[in-house]
Each structure stands twice: as structure tokens, then as C-alpha cells.
Length: 344
Ligand code: UD1
Image (cartoon, rainbow, N blue to C red):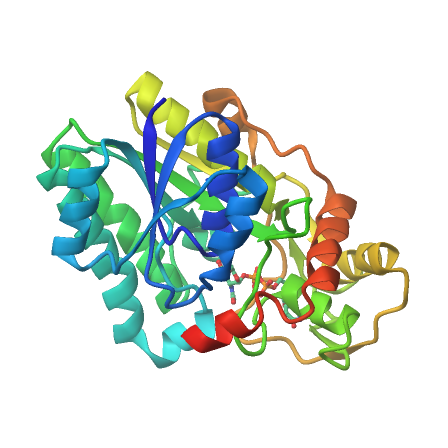
């Protein structure tokens, strides 16, 4: 079976995709520098897959380390997750974001080219669509990023398009993720953000487990059914399976593809909160506060192209997203715990 290299392999989406690829029969070699993840993930992957994870601790910009990985493993395709994703931090530290998100992408592609590997799945984001001109967003929606993080994704897409234009033997899958949430159904791996969570679901999880007092709902006066922000939340295992479908497409069709990965269903902050209350079995305190700067009122995917081209669609609904997030958070109230702290 083909061997797939994952960069950012021990992160939230990387770790779930790792399991999905193994479940689909692929071999996996993971690379991560633990700059935003925990080595404990490897123990969990060993337990869940009943095999030793093949892993190299390295920065994707370390050319010698990447050369060693490609020399040792016959890699058929790369899934490039290694990147930072906090919007607020990206505004405060643009150089850190451009260096890591674009430098890392270029370093990865350069290493691939040295070793004749020319199939790559890129973690893009719905953020590349910017202010909605129409909804749902289709892949043909105009592109306009609204912050530094978003620009690293948009520029990352462009770099790869330029690479393909220069050398048509490259094939890329540009995957535009909507809002990934949830955890593996075992509750053994999940999202473990450092510090105060920026994103809604991890914050709600921490309120549910008593680590935070209440949820601040950013805005209650949007032009949406209940006044709170609407997003297309997507179960991380569906997203992981979307990567498996994209890898198959690259290897079988040998063509590039740009697709949204979402459910096509918009869910409000209060709807998500209610579903989480059902999952954890108790009320969750919240306060409606001011809007967060830079937030859009509402967006969701037209998810039909991924179904048509990749044969992929999301199968897990909102309640399962909350049930699985809760299982993970309840069993791991401090995430991966001390091992995560040591690396911080
Ligand atoms: C954010 C980023 C987006 C990035 C994505 C994944 C912004 C403006 N956008 O998306 O670029 O791709 O994360 O990392 O940061 N909310 C609350 N209280 C909270 C947290 C969030 O009410 O404590 C609300 C938000 O206002 C929004 C919804 O929950 O309506 C989802 O927020 P979040 O999880 O941060 O995702 P996005 O803002 O959609």
C-alpha cells in the first residue's frame, strides 16, 4: 500500500487523519516538531491502531532532516498540515506566521521535488473566501483573505498554483476546510489547544468540564435566526476521511482538485451550545458580549463538488460532534496533560 507523509502529524487534524489513513490501508510516516502538539499523541495512536507509529521529530524547514525522511521512506504523497492557525496571533506576529506557514510549505515542496514526489494535499481554509458575496460559498466564489492567517492560506494556495503552472507533473488537492470540531469516537485523541482557546468548541468543552466559568458569545445581534454567528461545523473524522479521499484522487486520477470540505449546514453558536448541553447533561453558562472584531455573521459550504469529484461527504451530525468532543474532554480534562506542558 502507498506510504503517505504527514507534516504536522501530531496536531489536531493530523492525528485524526493519521488514523483514517491507517484504517483505509495506507502506510503513514509522520513528521512534527511538537511546536504546537504533544508527543503523547504518539502513545494514543499506538494504542488506537495497535501498531507503532512511524514518526520523525523534525521541522519541515530542516532540509537535511526532510531529506533523511524521503531517503528512508518511499513516499507516494504528502499531506501538509504543519502550520499555525490563531488569527489574533497572526495579526500580532505576521513574520512568525509567514515564516512558518509559507516557509514551511516551500520547504516541504522543495524537499519533495528533490526526491521526485509531486502529489500534495494542502490544508486550506474557508477563510480564503473573505466577505461572502453569496452563500453557500462555492469553490468559484471570489477569494479575499481578511487577516494574516487567511493570507498565509491564500498565498499558500497561490504558491502551489504557480508550481503546477511551472511543472505540470505536480498534482495538488486544495482542501478548504470549514469549522472542524469533535474528536475520535474513542475519546483518546482530540483537540488540545494551548492557553485560552480561540475557537468555539474547545472553549465550550472547557466550560463543560469546569476549566472556564462561562462562554462569552461574541455578538447576539447578527442578522441570523437567533442573532448569533452561524458556521459550518464539520466532524474532524469526516474531515480526516476527506483527506483519505483526496489522497486517493491524487494517486488514482493524477489530477489536481480544489474542494470545500464542509457539511453544507449552518449552525449558530446557541444551537451548538444546546447540543453540547445535551451531550454533557448539564446547563452551560454563557453571556452575550460584543462582537469579535473580524468575525463574519454567517457562512457555510456548498459541499457538492467534493461529493462529485472525491465521492466524499460528511456523515456525522452536530450531536455526534458534541458527544465525541465531550467524551474526549471528560476523559482528558487537561488534554494531553503534562507532556504537552513540557513541550510548551
Ligand atoms: C476561526 C478563524 C478562521 C479559522 C478558524 C479555524 C476568525 C475570525 N476566524 O474561524 O480564519 O480558519 O477559526 O481555526 O478568527 N465564538 C463565540 N465565543 C467564543 C469563540 C467563538 O461566540 O469564545 C463564535 C464566533 O463569533 C463565531 C463562532 O463562534 O461565530 C465560531 O468561532 P471560531 O470557532 O473561532 O471559528 P471562526 O471564527 O469561524
